[in-house]
Image (cartoon, rainbow, N blue to C red):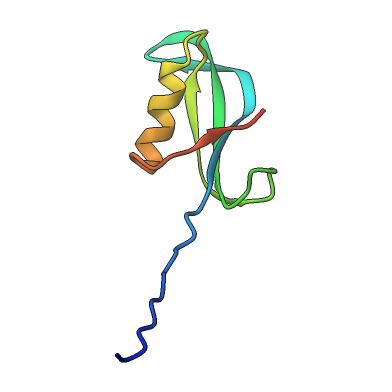
Length: 84
């Protein structure tokens, strides 16, 4: 019987993180005074040393959903981690 070699290929999945990098910045949206928060999205860096993918402003909210939606608008369905 011939020798058989099996090779397993693994691909590193880039880790994506999101962080609030600015909060409660005064803004005017649709003619009304409000505040916005800036989310910075990075790749390959759980420790803030990653490569910046994008930054996006979101109207300040106590609800987490608008922040998650904003991140998803940039990265799609890829997994990500919020860092503080």
